[in-house]
Every structure is written in structure tokens, then in C-alpha cells.
Image (tube, rainbow over all chains, first blue to last red; front, top):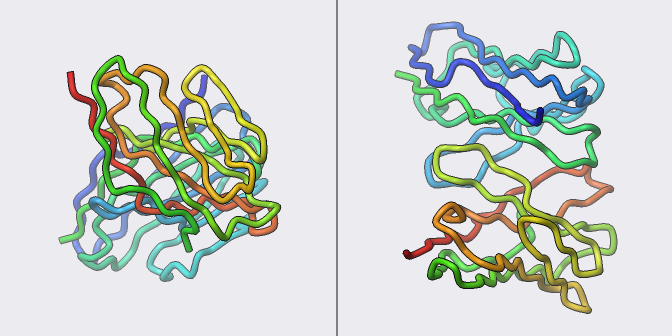
Length: 112
Length: 111
């Protein structure tokens, strides 16, 4: 099973809302990632977790708060987002950080 | 920052080979050359990677120039399912093994 699942598929939220994106993998991978992809642009790395610890934060605004509660699960908590944060949010995982990354289908987020 | 240069788009006929070029003139000795592709409405998927020697797998072949300043992804027989954005990425073991995506090449396959 090489599947990374992400929920929800679509999310619409207001600027004052708090919501969370969820990512799950059952491949035993110890590295997990969040990427942001704007329309017709390439994915941009946001966060990297290795062995459930945050190892890279690419200067992401604090309104995005990642969490890795266990080795299979990665969350992205959203609060006070701006319309320009509307994008496809992709989760990925890999055995270790040097290994091939497997991507989920993404959550399409719209901020009104 | 992305360290690769790829054509914006390419077109191929179905059942014919496709050669997707990538220039990476500033490649360092510790950079691995990775290719991912992103089909419409999906997340990226791994295609192939290499360091110095040419590589083959069930999806594609990767030809790496002797000076490593360029590489070519070869799809031996393009199908309509291969229509995607193809990303050539240099992955540095000393920069956290991060995947830094460039603009990629949009591959269109005609039937």
C-alpha cells in the first residue's frame, strides 16, 4: 500500500474560522511533509517532520500550525487565513528524508 | 531556489518516444537528479532518479550527461495517461534532501 490519504478533499472557510487538514499514511514512513501549490504553479515546501519532530519550517506564517501526533498522522491547523492562502495543500511521506516521497491527492482550500 | 531549466511545454504523439530535457549547469557533486510528474488533479508522483549513471525503471529512463550539467527523461512509448507536468529536481543531501520544484514541462500527448 503506497497511499497517502488527505481529508477533506475540499474546504471553504472564512477568514475568522479555525479548521484543520488531515493527512494519513500506513506505510511506516518516518518523514512527512506539507506543501502548498497555487494554481498553475509548482508545489512549495512548507514543513518537514522527521520522527514526529518538526525539522524544517520554510518561514511559513504562524496562521499555519502543523502537528504530528503520531508516526502515521500529520495535521495542519489553520487560523485567521487570508484569501491569498487559497491553494491546493499537498501532504507527502517518505521512509526517511532522503527517500522517495509519496504524495496525497491534496486538499483544495478556498478562503473567503 | 529551483536550480533547473526545462522547456515550458512539449507535445508528443501517442505510442512515440518522448525526450524531456533538463539543464542544471550549477549542479554540485552531492545533487541527485530526480524527476516527478503531476497528472491533472493529482499530487506529484515519483518517476526516476540518478546521480551519475543512466537509470532505467518500469516507467522511464534517465540519461545523464557526462558532465552532469544536463539530463533527459525518456518515456519510451507515450500514452495519453502520460500527459502531465514533469518536474526535474536537484536534491541535495546537504540541504535536507528537500524537493524544490521548478516550473516543470507540460507534456501534451496527441492521439
